[in-house]
Image (cartoon, rainbow, N blue to C red; front, top):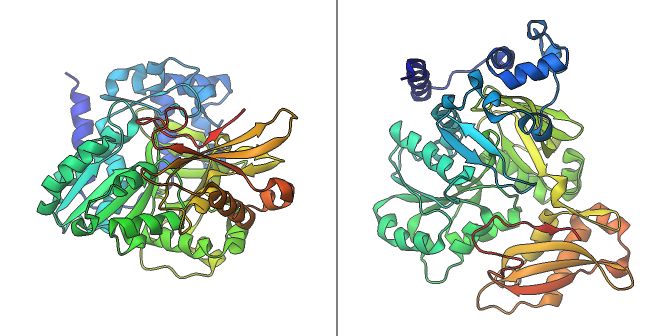
Length: 475
């Protein structure tokens, strides 16, 4: 029996039940010292780099520490050595990454980690949806199993219930039939229903004919994929959501360290303001794409930017010090971003912002221009098109017998619909020209119209059911 573990868990619950206390940013130096003293792999890495932990006393010292990533750290050392005291017994759960960038990765975690991340769910469900005052049914629609999304989400929401929020959790996972079976039975007993899942999957659930979503006061918590503001508006209309700014929130989550940040009414309002002003958005973010924009708690996650990619420091089952996650993006102070936008958002937390475009792994190069899924998505969400497709697609740059390249986009057809492929191609081209300056300037005019291929819902080659969708293919 590990009595020290009992003390840590009790302290974690005590901290979770108490009001949030501000923490000095020097906590990252304390975390570094504790990690250097207790994690064998990190101690070895410092020794190999000639770093004496006692010499790291300032933020300037801290920012000279080596960056970590999966190949140079996680995959280099035995799994137990990445954990405190060199043992997996300090953790009680194992999560597995989706493996979207390669083989799946193992991430041990402990109950204390869940309580820490539950604060982000609290900001969304309690501060955003009023789940401390309204009886709430939370429907976990992320896949259940070793993947990080489903069981982690279920645990965090249950912790909010244990804190006293009138929240009840049901976890059908990404089983559409089971979701639609339990909802009619349970939803009438609650003042609001929160669906938590990946955007394209929840859209597919909401698009099911014959469901009166407007009767259930639906809220959405999303993660795992970027989406446009047109998508937010479209899904809100279909779900009977009157206020997409406050009732639809995305999480910036990773298997590596749980939830790093979350959308708020402040961040969503700014993003919607910039979505209507692509030139201003390009000035602010330095890119033609509209990034995901969330707020984060610097007392919980410490962000830096290195060569245009995000680096964070966070405690967990595997403590991560200056971990480079390969997401392209950046950070803004609260006042800094408001000044750059020239926009006054609604009242909300004055926390800093982190923005991310995703990873270059998920782009296709065409005539030297990066074609991003975010741009194609907007083309599929235009009136007259959005009702005929599911929102899933695959981008490819394909070569013909003469070695000429064309842009092919395979689109999943909504059940019972017959989309117009030509109209879809024209809509995608128009949005690429509007939103992607590289595409507009690099791709010859005669090659700008993509080839659109229509495939039925659930097509096993392009849109297999039950697995995380990938929006790009490389030939």
